[in-house]
Image (spheres, rainbow, N blue to C red):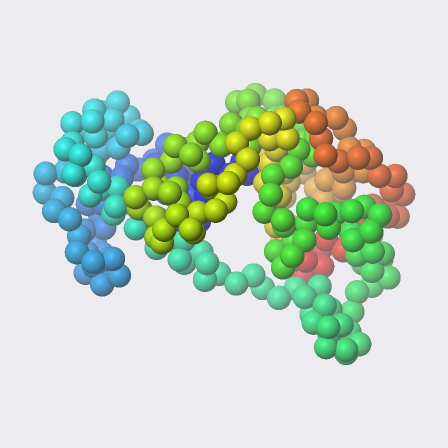
Length: 282
């Protein structure tokens, strides 16, 4: 999530399943569906399915009033049974997501050639404009401070002065998400986690308050960015050109303090940055 309200792929994968604007299901129905359609396969991976014969067809701590009432009436043991099946659904989705390898891009091939001592040739070589963009990215424009590593993200949260979107609910970023991730029964410290507390350093030692968290959002990967318009966590900018313009001007944040400072970039330099960013998608 853009604000880190979930702390793992598998915990994140669960939220769309019960969101009325996405899948709109409920965890009891999903548990019954797994038992009916994928019972044997589930048990080969996760062990025996629980007895769900007394579990209502539709029940969830979220969802409709009827689903919430049905959930509240369930014995604690059945609540835990359903939650465990639901958690394992998330873990299966998370395992699949981890198997997805990003395609090799022109920049990857360029970097591999340089690392091996070879001279990039043909399409693997960056154009003069793209090379200027790369130099700006790691130099004057300072993009690499947050967009670094193989995924071009530091996986951290930053206030970069991104404006709110009119008519959308208020979104204060990481400062409000901390409460959500701590309360999530499927977080790294919950009973459905794999491993022990030693695997949960990020959750145990996360920063829980302070002005730096206000309107701070997670740094996204730049891989494939050219094909993922619109940009920022709520689609505030329609093009990469608008993103570069925002960071060049570095407007003040409407709340909290932006970490970004203005950078004077010429039209040629802005175009070069966009050209380089496109090499991460081609």
